[in-house]
Image (cartoon, rainbow, N blue to C red):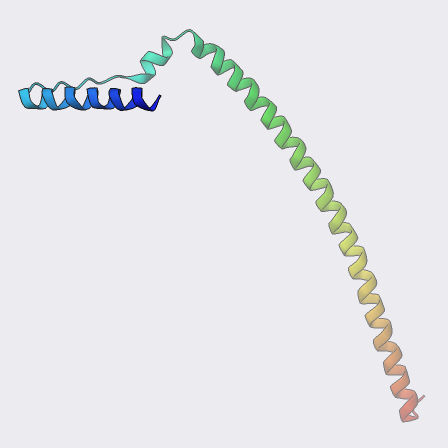
Length: 107
């Protein structure tokens, strides 16, 4: 395989040098869109790509729904825990304040 590649590369290189030496270098332009449009396999590939695209969209939509559901679960749990934490901190502050008042002899 490597041998064939080297031979092909040498052949292309020698043809290119030969053409350059003669001064008759011709360049061809190929419009690949036209070539692909005339290939019968293109419509099959386009339909399979469209099908694959739709399946990926459905999968992505499912993943987004799952993410949003889990996010909402975690956020609601966070809010509940935050409320409990704030209540505990306020109770502790009130308890400390009452103890301070009792220590001062005010209550």
